[in-house]
Amino acid sequence: MNEPTVSGLINKLSLLSPNKEYAELAVDLNDIYESSEKLKLFIKNLCNSSLDKETLIDQLMEIELELDHINWHYQSLKKELKPITE
Image (tube, rainbow, N blue to C red; front, side, top):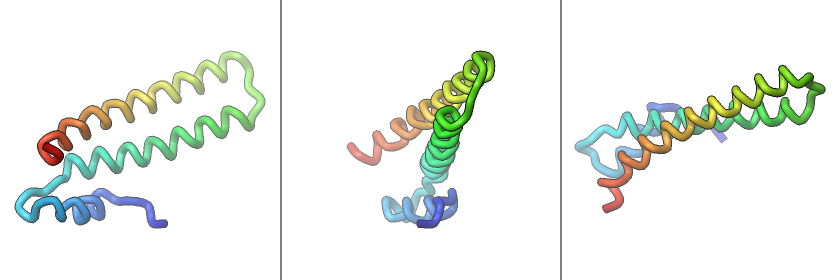
């Protein structure tokens, strides 16, 4: 499967309306995808490496930051989807 790109997502989202560009929605989807890939790696590395307490804490903080980033884009996505789905 090809990784999504913002332009590819905008192209797909144009099916919703040819008169409106859904760039913000595309950016949110793309960032959620990229962050989920990072999150997957963070968790995988967490499980596959021997860590001291400080490093573990640092990695958990990185995971929290990535989750906050996903949540920010999720909240933005919800706002963009509301008028489309009503």
